[in-house]
Amino acid sequence: MSGEREQEYFSDGISEDIITALSKLRWFFVIARNSSFTYKGKAVHMKQVAEELGVRYVLEGSVRKSGDRVRITAQLNDVATGSHIWAERYDRDLADVFAVQDQITEAIVAAIEPQLYAAENFRARRKPPNNLDAWDLVMRALSHYWRVTRQDNMVAQALLEKAIAIDPNYGQALSLLATSHMFGVHLGWADIRSAAPVAERAALAAVEADSEDPWAHNALGSVYFSTRRLDDSLAEFELALQLNPNFSLAQGYYGLALSYCGRWQEAHEAAQRAIRLSPRDPSSAIYYGVAAYAQFVGRNYQQAIALAREAIRQRGDLTGAYRVLTVAAGMSGQAEVATAALQELRRAQPNISLAWIANQLPWKLDADREHYLEAFRRAGLD
Image (tube, rainbow, N blue to C red; front, side):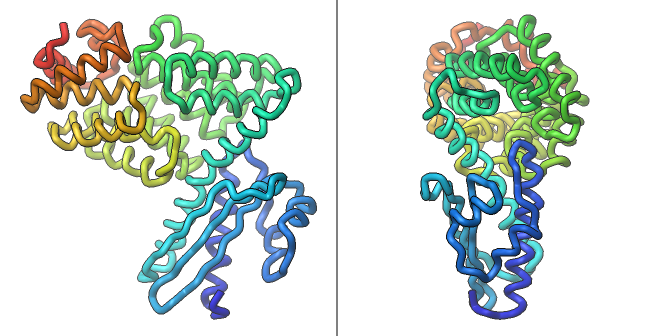
């Protein structure tokens, strides 16, 4: 907005990078650069843009440079309602122009994905139940999946099965169905013996439907994780992140798998990337829980307690976070905290026991399993 020629190049570069990165979200139709740039420098109404390009949402932004500082604004608009879905402002030093360009692109793209899903779910909820197509059903399923409760997970699975009945090759529906089953296993809501075969069939079908879809590889990674194929799990999560580096859900699950492999520093970094990528993400509590567990594996009990408490603050029934709070308090000698956390854990996960832990959770290293079990013994679990 300063009119400086070099700033125009910077703005164009960010715009091109955002378009490229958004295109990796394979379930959204993203207009290519050459069409988007025809509106550059013109005063056009957003509805005109949407009608001419055939889109429901328009992302717009501005760049202001002052000395060595740059301010970038971005705003996601729902054209049908004329409302703003999301807006953010970024202030950065311009010491490394390309690094700033990458940071802003990453932040905007990661923030947009959950906001678009939320907007699409709102649109789907206004449709009559007998007029829902497979996409609408997946959007509704996502809204339930992100609430992270046992009942919502079951509702999400039912909606996804309806979507798959309409379209048996619907990759995202298959991916999310597999992920939800494995998520239920990890949180103690489902038995792995019944959930794993269903999830693995769905995840493999998703990869077959679209081998370039990061959701599909994230789903297969979660199946391999829960069924103790940890090296295969890491490979799938890494492939998902190669396909879409801004996929915060895959970053979070990757961190969890790294934790159970004993690679706690890398696990913590992955969880922090997930939090940074999508700070308003509905799954943010899960990422804090993963970071907490990584710190527990590293014997950093106070950091684990702080991160687990943040996860619980965001989601009061997150069993994984209560498990970490219990064990970290148990190992650090905070008996009252451990007892209270175990009581809440039993409320959220009534089937918790040393036997459940030993049989259900997929450690690579025996020492890490024994560390976790010993912490629960100290907290009073039998």
